[in-house]
Amino acid sequence: MDEKRIHRIFEISILLKGAHALIECIGGLILVFVNTASIRLMVNTFTQTRLLDDPDDYIATHLARLAGDFSVSSQHFYAFYLLSHGLIKALLVIALLRNKLWAYPLSLVVLGLFIAYQLYRYSYTQSAALIVLTVFDLFVMLLIWHEYRLVQKHASR
Image (tube, rainbow, N blue to C red; front, side):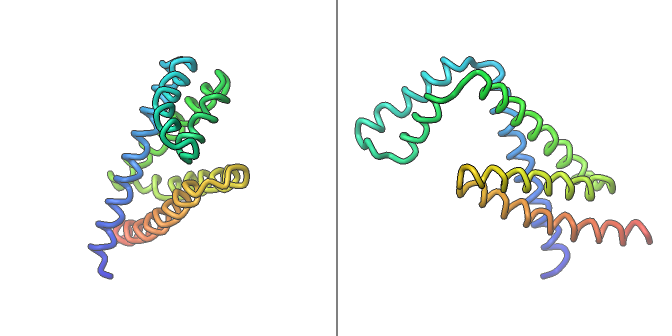
């Protein structure tokens, strides 16, 4: 595969990371400004008709269970987690797209830490989504490493 194509894949994957960071920030802000009772009501409204049609609906039963267990402390944790995670990734995405040399190794470290946390969470939840996210993060790390080597080579010239 030629370098231009790899660079394009790098840019697309970084933009996807940026979109994911934006979604995390929006989710975190929603959790900051919407109270737990409203969140439970929205989830119950969404799941009620689905569960009437299919009491075994996988998504609806899990959402209803999560909403029932959703506490103020959970809300604060998820708001903090989503906002901090999203902001860190957004700043790194911006720096990577601007070819800031320091952003490449820092991104590798940060993604490595996120992967470690995702695998830790997976040990409790067995969520396939965490595995998909981890595989994508590993792929992005490979692209960042490859791009970093190219940027270093061009900077030394």
